[in-house]
Length: 207
Figure 1 (cartoon, helix red, strand yellow):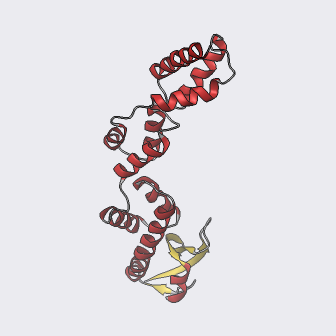
Figure 2 (cartoon, rainbow, N blue to C red):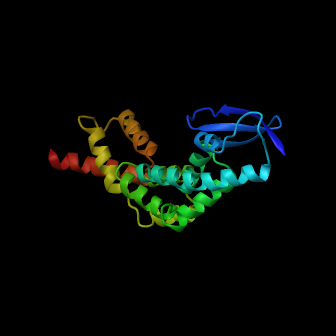
Figure 3 (cartoon, rainbow, N blue to C red):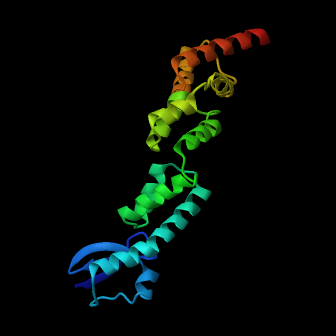
């Protein structure tokens, strides 16, 4: 048997407690679960019994919180995993929750990548999209599939048109600014060159 020596509020949460057994941190636990099971400082409890209490309550709560999160903020496996740890759930519960979410189709990095490209592809180039998807934990194969057939030239051209209104396209300093503007958004030098050429052609036709 072990003794509960501390029950402290977990930082950044209002419903979790950090539980210590025999002076050492053991786990975080839902405050309502702690109250329901009359867990208090000084109480003696078997570690296995405590693990069972946590497992049976946290696994459903973790799934519910993860499901609510992705319904409001489409996310990746990495994103949901980090949130679950931030919420104070242990490794076993986190891994079970993520696998369950994937099984039921609530987490799908390949689909997330396709949707991300579809939504953001009108304002960002291929390189920027690739970098952002990598940062979100999407694997290289899923990124490649999502970007397959992606052509950002028309989007880059529209951005360039807006940026260049009233600007002198023969001004090298301005062209450098325009190029950096497009490069920052993930478009390659080829798209930048094509945009500049197209803009100049359009200006000549308007004259």
